[in-house]
Image (tube, rainbow, N blue to C red):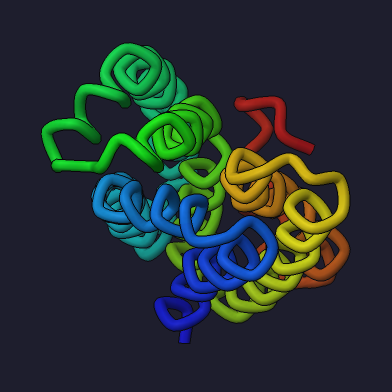
Length: 209
């Protein structure tokens, strides 16, 4: 179910951009998809590992190591995001040329890909929090928040592309904006759960409310 909902992000971008911006913009978005999917696979792989480590320590009832694993994953996410931002700003155009992107959509595709690299920290933190919740045995909250994030992405796609006319770059901003709100969504639901103390201890050293 989660993997299916994750595909809605790319499908929504393609539908809205193609409907309101035309074939060139749609070709630009399509040209970036292999790189976007590669980045998504990288983020998912890292955070699956984080979830496994957290669930292991959770099962051992070792809250100190669980907290340390969570905080270290935050640091890893920050460093990885910074590195990817520099990489994307420097080599986005070159990567697209290596992939054989036509000159027509190349400029817009480069802008779309650069925005995706710059804002990578938002979906990366989204995957991190999702894996942390699943590691704590709370996959239901992660799924509910994913649904809210997907619905927000659809609304923002229409607003940024069709409403304020930000072009293909507006489509690239939708996913990080909808994913960036995700860590704050589960609060009201999660505090009512028996594991709230464990989650609070896990997050307190990272100064997360």
